[in-house]
Image (cartoon, rainbow, N blue to C red):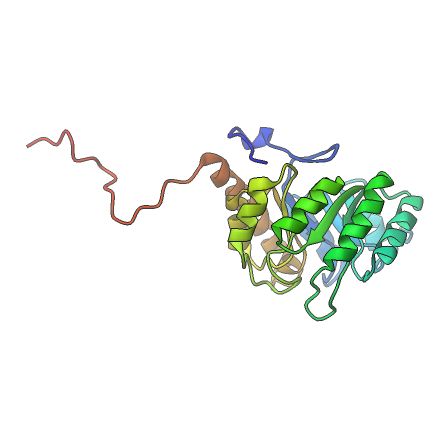
Length: 265
């Protein structure tokens, strides 16, 4: 899915029936305080915010609570199934969330290994099939495997979210070749999820043609999360602009910026 060049203001991220001006999706964990979370979210410019359903009580909407911030109406929530290790756990968690009034837009995450936090492909596909049939708009976290991404798209997922590197590692884009293959064949948005460490990583993902970037630790784990959130906002925008502009071709040798033809002797 390749976007035609045009003004970035007229270049929204489309996920299912949802439309977002920002292509940066941010998480809400690991911040020092709710106040810091609020400031970082604002600095990021993100409209879509992911929240771990098994690690936060959205029903707690008391003064100064994270639940109150997230249900303030300023953001679209993307509930995720972090901490789930089976398809059954993930499906049950999202069904409960829907009963609590959380929207149908969800991030599916089924972990296969507690050390690497790599996803379980088989369980992810099983859960995605059930959730799509039940009317959820599913964004699955997955390995950067073109075959898995194709299967998730065929099941009806609204986007695919291949990792750049292990969750929370900050290693950046480890396999740009696989991302290029995924992008070449996908007809739905490809959103890099996990492994981004700094602004240049986000820019690279967007320059490759990815439609968005999701991150949490890269911002929350920075020495100054609010400033890093701003940097990520600018990096995603710059990377998208560069992709739409189309970079110059790489050359093996120099090519003078000023042409030699027409020189006055």
